[in-house]
Length: 97
Image (tube, rainbow, N blue to C red; front, side, top):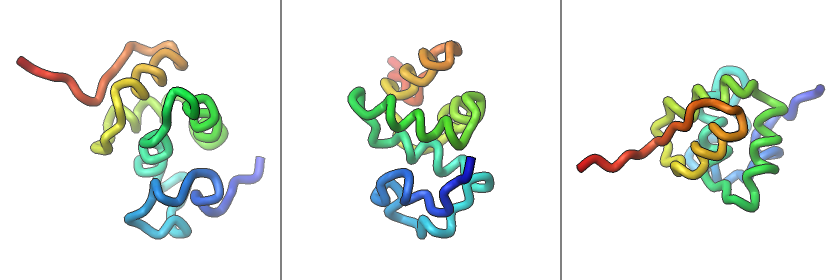
């Protein structure tokens, strides 16, 4: 499968508002691309967004980089990913009392 050269051809450019999309490398910058690609996903768009990521990255990479990101990825997205890949549920934010 031929990969796109520019991430903005696959995902909305506004997700990468603070960087030059044309300089992102799919292998080198997966820690940036994976979380940003799911940052604005909704229950309506999750299936389409995750399928694009799956063409580029393994489920293991997707889970790994979502677990370690500092991006504000919603717990709902994290739970959807864990369910999709049948891994233990994880959350980015936990309220402590």
